[in-house]
Image (cartoon, rainbow, N blue to C red):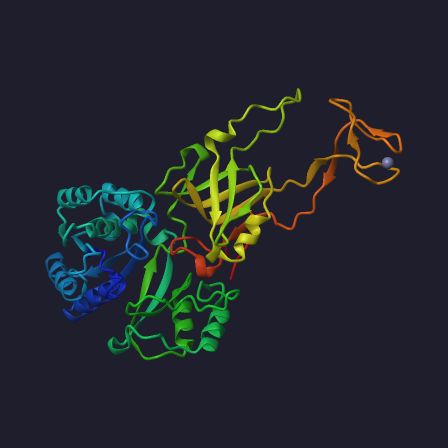
Length: 442
Ligand code: ZN
């Protein structure tokens, strides 16, 4: 068995796509009498600086000898990959291995490529040490993703791992670059038919068929889900322009494989995190409709003697943001109040966590307020430092502030951005397995 890893063949300018190149490699292998066992679409760290659109790499698992695999893949890359485009650095790695039994270091390399960073030289060195054949065009950046794709199957659990499926249909060559033609009703109906086994096909709130990309590439649509048969069935129900070819990918999309559990103080730019803390201030909406809020360390409950343990809010406060394209998700963020306990998930960039989802753990349901006069109903005034409150007119008094309940219109549990704003690798709540109630956006 041979594992062929390839990456960074995407071109914004010319509209090629790594998945299409991989599909053509698979076709070439079949044409040469080899069997393709699986095409694995691996989403790498969405926060990396050099990312191509969606930052995807592909592994082709095939019953063909490594020499022939390299020759076929290399030929397809030269023919199809945008090796002339200055914005791409394609890479190819071919391993004479069972996908389940790549060395520990290759599996570790794959994990790090999803939630951290790598240098090109490290990829080249490791591939050489393992006896893999590697080829990089130009700066060779693509060898990082290609080697990560080789290690991904084992890194993320092999046959027992958390994988999803995407059925991708490609456009006929003559149609590429024009508007995609499809019947919206058939797409929305098909999406409803199989939800939630099939997810992120459409965004119902925005009325968008998000499975049809807006980029100039060869992809007509991609249907994602937990069930390989269901994604194909949904695609069959679409009424669209002619489909040139199609492929079913096994993927780490929709799995949250990029999130690292961390403390607030550990958060650094360039990675994605799952962090628990307490809301520090009132969310604010800025120009462009982006909503910002600050999360600080959890304040421990008061000690038994009544004193509050000291907390350094400034040191580890983290700004979190819900950007305008997340639409209704911003309402959930705007509903947060200081003191709410939350778990936030997203990518850290420029010191701000771009929210993908968050869990409300505890809501503040009361606040201390100035007492009202029982006789006239107006707000009392302070009677002086530590002197309580009073109403001059009615000569009533109160010893201090009173607890008042707050109406909250935010539900405890997980909230998420809608499908139109979902990152490929982010796990939709409807897939389940979350520690709390879920409020899926569909
Ligand atoms: Zn009064």
